[in-house]
Image 1 (cartoon, rainbow, N blue to C red):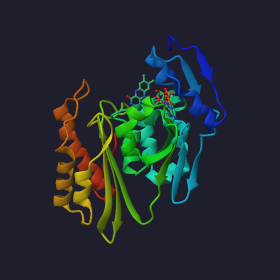
Image 2: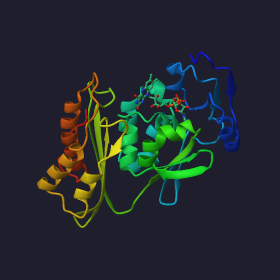
Image 3: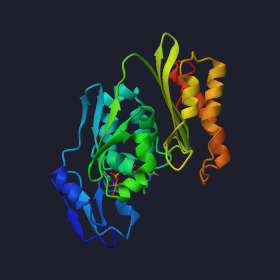
Image 4: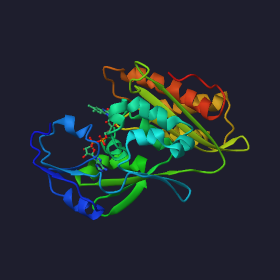
Length: 284
Ligand SMILES: Cc1cc2nc3c(=O)[nH]c(=O)nc-3n(C[C@H](O)[C@H](O)[C@H](O)COP(=O)(O)OP(=O)(O)OC[C@H]3O[C@@H](n4cnc5c(N)ncnc54)[C@H](O)[C@@H]3O)c2cc1C
């Protein structure tokens, strides 16, 4: 399905993989669920990452390390990720791909594709994930920054090796809200909030949105408006407005820009309410 593919590599060392992906026309392959159907005529060689030993989910320091070749199904079944995300990882994964695709598609491939409405990436942004990659030297940066510069890094032959998800201590609140056409369709717009609390006051909040720009994004102005405050109706209204207001989302057959903007405000409000532990709602 890649019409000009001639060479298949399966290195067993990271150094080997980094070296092999450098020539033009050579790309890494994770599960191949996106790359192979793309029929990209520029691809002449693929570097299979499955023998690099990057299929781990393990505790490290004060967080979780996720190897780039874990499958979406491994993420869904991980007790550590389940606990860290209060079950939201499983929800985000189910919304992304069917059971067959989940067994193949990898986390690294998902980050590299950087789909603008990806609920997995939106959730990882709210969880404050960082990405480690080689381009060809080792780099580590917040996922938000990586997604901004993703195209440039990948053009320069970047190889994503792992993500780190911090597990902060203290009182946390997580909330996710989305709208989709059918219960198992990918979200048109998705909002995820994580807040840290101390004595009823929010000490830190991350608000992430999918489906509202060319990549999943953080709503920084909304986050600033929530910090250091006890959340009441006015604070939530203001944050939801600040999250949606500056955005001019692209429209497509699933939802116009105006619809997405209206939904972003509603969904951020719902996710905030869930994160503060009241106003729980049923997810579709
Ligand atoms: C037709 C189709 C459309 C899809 N559309 C969407 C969508 O819009 N939104 C969504 O959330 N999910 C989508 N998915 C789900 C998709 O399968 C997964 O989300 C994931 O993006 C693909 O992971 P993979 O491991 O199969 O990637 P692959 O197909 O192996 O690779 C995808 C791209 O990522 C690169 N890559 C892979 N691993 C790495 C790495 N470790 N470092 C650097 N680059 C790497 C490859 O070179 C390639 O360019 C789609 C799936 C299919 C089959």
